[in-house]
Length: 240
Image (cartoon, rainbow, N blue to C red; front, side, top):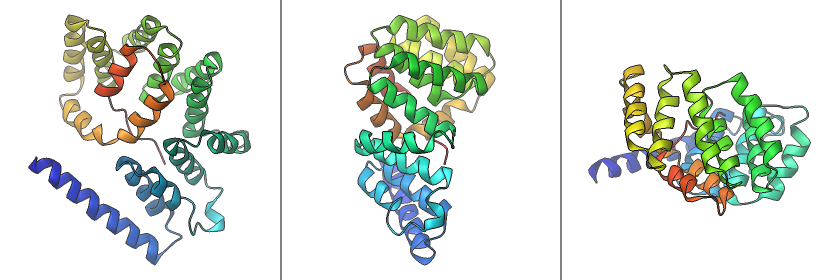
């Protein structure tokens, strides 16, 4: 309990610090994005969206990081229509990983699973350890009533990189959720051997609950295996 209170206190202090930095200099784009991300972590998507809209200097509106973060806030707020409109306007010119991922999530929500997988597999080809893209890929199969295929995809990406601690941990969580406990323990051991500090780092990443809420909402009535996964794994926070 004391640890939780300390973490909450640090988050509150960070929120005040970032808000003050923005007040003193509205052009400080890094502080604006960081504050919006922090507000998403604290389950305040409306405030996160306001930070990316209110008093936003004109020259910042077209920055890729600003566009992406505003769209994450829109998705967390449930405004899929506005998020989709932004993607239609920006994706032809700004093909950032965040925007591609957002489009894939919206495609999954619209049951356009093949389109989503095409984008996500391209992202994973460019960066095989992109856990956001891999988790969204598994979501595309789970939401399409193919949980076994989702697990198989995780196995394939993990097998291709046996020394990748994040991928082995990701596989372990999926195997555990599927009830394959012996295989899960082997994957966890492989993750620990690859990076003994990974478990502590993974625990630190559990603050990214805005991602959990966003993909769980988009998953809708997906199979129980995916819903179990969303309770056990938190990927790396989205890039700015």
